[in-house]
Image (cartoon, rainbow over all chains, first blue to last red; front, side, top):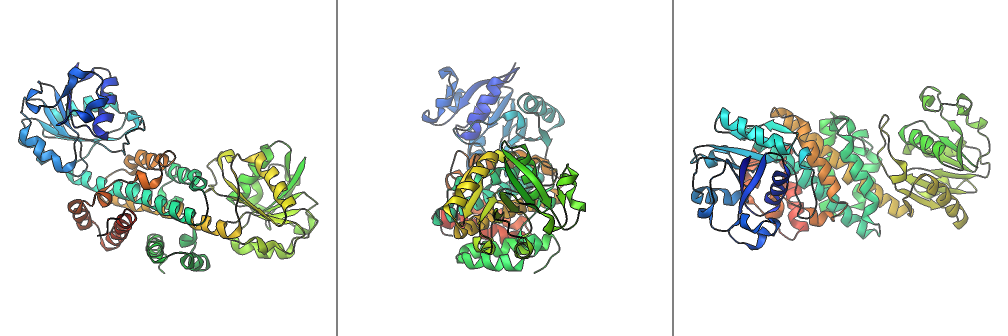
Length: 253
Length: 253
């Protein structure tokens, strides 16, 4: 049985807690958070911990806190010899170099409080201070997910930035469309099947090949009509993305 | 049994053909296209038609051709009294006003050649020249889809423009991320679960509430680091979408 301590009480911590607790040969021995109030997801009271000096030895310490708080935790967490890994997409491996054994355990997914995620489908990006520690992290990650990737700090940063494009920015486009629908007396749910299919399509087709629409067709009439229907900010976004599609597909405006 | 003639041989025509052929009380009586070569999806040879004057009477004529070709078809299609409807998101109902009975039958989805779509999940947006014709289109649409909406020409245009945002532009963000991953030696498939979950999330949460990321947190350090990692065009898109997120959430830069 591998003992895992989780540090943090946010969405990532809660989802890790659930998947590790359910995995074979793994158990969450303790979950630490400065205040007790967010530790409600830890069913077993004895596993809740609010004093970092009361953490016991474990094979793995997973730091699942906000990026800004990782260093702070690293400063106060006692080194008991177990592998200490953070779960951040943007922080370097070196942030944890004060420990004897350290690594990164980055689950590349968007986690919400009340929405279950099948963790076996979540890509876990690993990096470690030694081959031995990497093998250990692979062993643990393999017990909760089927998608294990070895990713260095530079690549992980690039991945995190890509995630901003496909997650944060796509979601914002949905939000702009939702607003625009509302202004025009249309229910947003009418767009949901299209959003779902757009995301599903790139599992069988590279996004370059899946591209459609007036920008790709260089349909200037429709583009001009669309621009007339938008306000200044919307128009700006429409123009820049239209130009970018045309540039990528070799159709300069 | 309601007889339906389909005009066109593209993806929309082929998907309509399949769903109408499979529906109860509906049958595709003929499919017209100028050339025979693209009519391979029509299994029954006798139903293929390449001379528009050889189309027989039917209760419904669905014009599923490119926007630019609708008027051309309307000019040459004989009016035999059935309801003539186009399937375009951007063309007005009036385009077909030369017919006695006319309407719009707009399926709001992205259709690919080799990817099946569950048509029952496809929103169908209807508009017609009379209440009677609208009732008729509702009856037909209800036999192939569970999602029927009454949408006027102005609203349909707004919907079509919204679709450009959530489909064309989101897909382009996926394409930019795919390119960026490639440049950094990362497989694009590592982002697929995140893309899927981002799209799935807005079925339970409005996109405004689903927003996360450095722009929303106004995390200037991460934003500055990201900008340093991008080329000029990517940087432009990153900045504009970041500003737009902050504006929508009342956090002006």
